[in-house]
Amino acid sequence: ILNVEQSPQSLHVQEGDSTNFTCSFPSSNFYALHWYRWETAKSPEALFVMTLNGDEKKKGRISATLNTKEGYSYLYIKGSQPEDSATYLCASLYSSASKIIFGSGTRLSIRP
Amino acid sequence: NAGVTQTPKFRVLKTGQSMTLLCAQDMNHEYMYWYRQDPGMGLRLIHYSVGEGTTAKGEVPDGYNVSRLKKQNFLLGLESAAPSQTSVYFCASSYGTATYEQYFGPGTRLTVT
Image 1: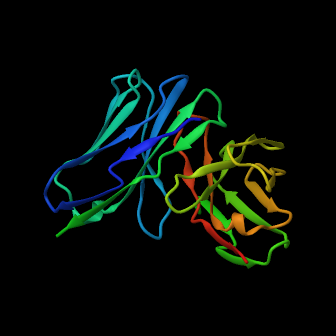
Image 2: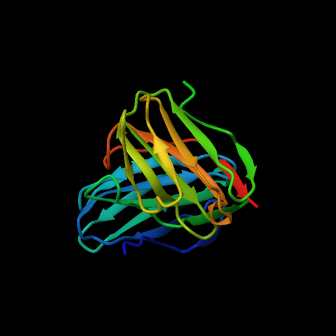
């Protein structure tokens, strides 16, 4: 059974601090990893799509890395702001479109 | 551009009733997906479609049927609703498969009593 684990489940961070969290996934037949940001009362929105081992992507203060050999990805947020408060989802995709496995997310709260 | 829209936003059904959830996208995407979201769990794929007229099963297809008669629409049907199908349902679409981001609709909250 394919399982994607995200840790921690929730995180409280002081405004201005940097933080990171983890997505672990089975590496066999891996095809791509997606990160989504999900704000309360909205729909998930894509942050990054990553495919290659060693990939690093950046969007503003948010960046992500990918290790496909050991099956993990890190998401980093530098200088957290209140608008970063959201649930961050990762999804691991395998060799066919039917194998899309989402983690249960990391809920991030930023304290002003 | 409306993106991905879902109808209805909320629905309450009695056990055994049927209903259809409609998903529409205006981005000319080939791929469309139906997920369910349950507390403490990640989004789980119910069915998906790789193009007009084609559908396939995802991780949790039992109790659901789908149709993709038009490229822009993806319908999810519950023939005989059960309390276990109480959930929030999300539709998504993408230009292609794994290497393309998915665009999500606003969700439909379904309660089966």
